[in-house]
Structure formats: C-alpha cells, structure tokens
Amino acid sequence: MSLILKNGTFINHETLEFKKADVVVEEASEHLAFHDNYEPQPGDTLVDCSGKYIMHSFADAYMRPGLSLAAQAKVFTKKESTYFRYVSDIIWNIDKCIDKELLYASALYAALNAVRNGTTFAICRNESQTFIEGSLSIINAAFNRLGIKTLQSFAASEADGYATAEREIRENANYLESNQGLMGIAASYLASGELVKETAKLCQKYKTGLLVNAAEDNIDQTNTMRDHRRSVILRFYEAGLMDYSSTILANGNAITDTERDYIKNKPVWIAHNPYGNFQRGIQPFNSIWLENIVMLGSDFSSVSMPDAMRHAYFQAIKTDCEIDLNTAFKRLNAVHKYLKNNGFSGDGDNNLIVFENNTPFNLDQNNFVKHLVYNKDVMDIRLVIANGKIIAKNGHTTLEDEKELLKFIAEQAKRISC
Image (cartoon, rainbow, N blue to C red; front, side, top):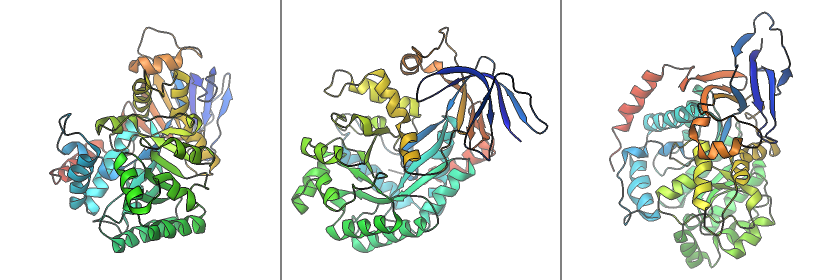
C-alpha cells in the first residue's frame, strides 16, 4: 500500500531541480519513486497534487521543547533584554514548575507547532535541575504521538552541584541504551573538569557526540576563562568531544577567531538559532570560516524553519557575516546532511511537505529561494508526511484531536508564572 502524490511538481532540496511527476511514497521504504503517469494499485491512497509542490519536510537542528511554553513568561524591555535575564528570570523560574505533566504538555506544544510548520524531525535538548529521571522518554513520547522523530540529549549542568549533574548524565546514558541520541552539557561555565571528562567517556561508550550550548554569550567565555583558564571551545577540543561528526555546538555567538581554527579542523557542526538569539538580545552570529557546517534551529521560539532561515538571512545583511540567498537555503537543509552522514534514522526521503503557492508569481529553479525568503505566502503547507504517513493536513495534525491537546496544554501552561 502506497501514498500516491499525483500530478505534483517535486523540488529537489539539494539541487533545486523542479520535476513534474507522480510521486510514490511508502512507509516501508525511505526512498521515493517517480512516474510520468502512475496507475494506482488496490489499497493505494491517492492525493491530487495538481498545481502543488512537493519537497522534503524540514528538520530542526536545535529545539528546547521543555521551554516551549515560555511565551507565558514575562516580557523584557530593550534595556532589560540580556542573556542573563532570560536565563535567571525565565528558564530557571520555569524549571521550578517542571514535573511530568508540565514537561509532557510543553513537549506536545513544541511538537504540535513543529508539525503545523512542516517539521518532521527535531534535535532536542532538555535541561532541568528539578525533573530529571525519565524526562527524555517523556519528550520522545510526545513527539512520537504526533509523528515526529527526535534525537534527544540532556544538558548536564552543575548549577545545583555535581550530584544533580550526575543524575542528569545518568538519565542521558540510560536513554542512549535503547534510543538514538547525543550526550549533553548545558554550557562550559556550568561544567567542571570532572563533568566534561565523564561526558567524554560516555560519548566514547555510546559512539555518539555532544550537544552543548557553546559560547552563546560572553558570560560563558568570561566565566570559563576565570574558572578553567581555557576558552569554551578549547575545553571541548582538549577533551576529545570535538572528534565526533555528530557533535553540535549550539549558537556560538561569542566564539573567538582562535576558536574558529579549532572548529574548522574538526568534523563538528554548529546549530544557529537566529530568532531565539534575537529575542534575547544576543550579539549576531558570525559564520566566517565556518560557512559549511552551520545548521538552523528554532530553540524554544516555535518559529518555523523557513522563518528561521529568513531571520538568519536578514540579520546577516550589512554585517561582517552577510550571506547570500543560496547559503541561507543551504543552512535550512544542512541538518538533513548531518542526520544522514551520522546514520540517524527518521529523516528519510519519505518525509515530505506538499504546499501551494498563494502568490501571483511562478516558481522555478532560479527564483524559488528568493521567493521563499522574501515572500512567506509562497509556501502554504497543505500536507505533512512523515515516514510515508500523512501526519498533518491544512495546518492541523491528523493523528490526534487537536482541540483536546490544546485544552490539556493550556491547563498546564497556567502553572507557569514568571
């Protein structure tokens, strides 16, 4: 039994080739089949895609689902908006409320926004000093409920001491026993040498890399230099944590030129979160020397991946790290390369979006990216397909009663006060 996308125009996200074809999608196979005039077989599901476009769905390179309800939190003025205020007044306060129900609601809300926006895979970081054991499985269950695959990690932190960090490491390791994932550290300035060393051992044991918030702000650099007489990146470099092609350095807004040399000689990736960084008043990201290893994430903003690309592009204009349209589109899709090259499952070719162009402009190989960046209406997503199965239609999940989900999420969100 196959899903037949009839009479659509397929866009290859790697080459931007446009191809009119009937696309045959299967749950059992990650690969697509293209036909000029496919005759449906008994049991096939036929979808008329005349006038519509078909493309690989999106993947999010850095999401924090446990914080997806942060919109319930306080809003800062321009003067107040700093990295430390967001951490202390929002993230730490939300963490005081976190339990099983609130975490599950937060993850459901993150997954619901993702699927509405055409995202079928999310690389997730969880962080909590309050609710630790079983948390990664809870997040994974929420995403699976809506048809989205994940790559999970727990951000170990010594904000509450090493005993808490040990529990976080153990939670991460237990999850990796039976699930794909990454090891995690919250940030260099929140990790002692002992924590870094133990994380490196577990990366070696599970043959996986590290997800770490690396030099998002100068606070990370200043405190790391004060406590360890090393820069943020040098610590991870010396510990061997940058030897893994699956290691992700998130943000990197405050990395130095010397650190760029360390990074470019290793197989690691950077997850840039332009919308979240902008919200928190953090200095713009400079990708110089690192252009080919940058992916895009939403952080906890619930922004769509195309919107993340637009923010990355426009924020870079008139700066030292200005990028062109094709580079912005390449960063939108770089996460697919990361997942494929590292053998992570769940992001095969049978993950697709079907969209309409609600503008008066024709789309082709030469103008698609320009329209995608400058004209949001060029992509009106009608279907989201994950692992060969339709999981969203016309902006709503097909797998659950969305009203009931939102009712549960709203009840839990009332508990957040900061």
